[in-house]
Image 1 (cartoon, rainbow, N blue to C red):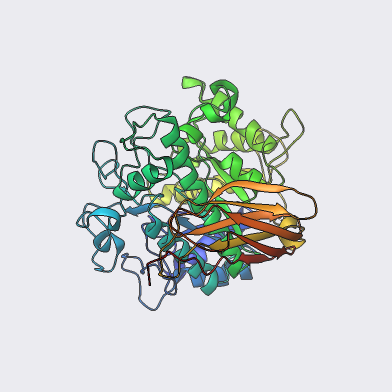
Image 2: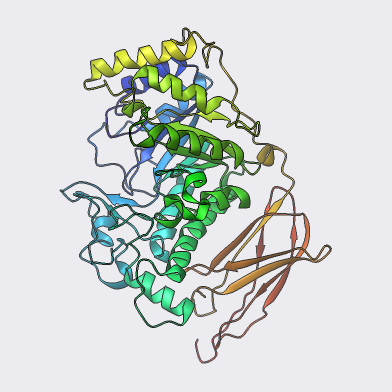
Length: 488
């Protein structure tokens, strides 16, 4: 449920939203509260939305109270990178558009930059750079504050990726900020400005998004281990069956969103994939939709996948056809755990007015719960419980996190970190600290682990720490003090 329309602006909006959710036997509401580094709530570290709603009304609080009373979970949808998307700047002088936007230079400017110097996608959309350490930490803390202050069942991340608006498909033209280029050059020893198609630069940018996601996951986990983290996965164009493998897809190569690896590592709990295709043979859209559905069913890696179709592109009848195919087993016998139609405000391609949208929503609910036009058993004829995330409710693995900060306050960026199980010899490698010195490992076997770092030149300290990993817990690896001789 997006918040671009007045779906949660008043208590009456929320009443209707919950009533409509019950009409289709929904068990989860994904409610957009964070659009552009702000919040439709009163108690997060993000500033309150600019939308003129009653100052005493907290939309997120109201949704949680009413949805939970109806037995429906609430997952707070937060846009991870969009900073602003209006022609007029925000009125709030504390918004990052002003404090870290166009008028600020160097690393203090958080807005992503295209290779041609542009910072805007389309008419107005500006996005933060996933390679800027301060920008990442701002978003991580904003999300943690929502989990800390509200009884949400989960966080749903949209735009956890690099932007659209590229000169060609299968490449990203973004990531040319001062922070990004400085950090890339420091990591690789190169002195040139890489081309958008540069493989090393693409891998490095992709890892920035993965590290961003990992940091959100572990920071949330530290606040509430039971809160689920989902992402809105990209499924542009054809699936890997036609493209020639996962790394050839636009999700991986263009927007740098390696959600397949995130599921395998366990740094997301649910992939709510945006499989937005019209139900038509024109342009092979049906083939695209079905290819991605097959992948979503087979690539869950002991986590969950949900198919998220575009209701707004289709008739109600076509959306029902797509829903049935989404929920049937793959050729290997696997199924996704759910269906999440987008969007509540536009439940079909005939939703031109609020009145039409209400009527189309009722038709969709009737087809899902009472009478499917195909004559098949309605998909949601009975209420269903949210599937249990046993890796959360009955955890068998634990996690490690830490920070590499020198005694004089400098963050050690892009330092190699590894963890070795002292009993089995199993090793988790390939990790580097981020721009704030933070690092993390997830889903490790309980037991004693040796965490090792490669100390940068000019830094003195103990390069190892032994920690005890316990199931369902995060343990901190501590390397203090790290000293730069000659510094206070």
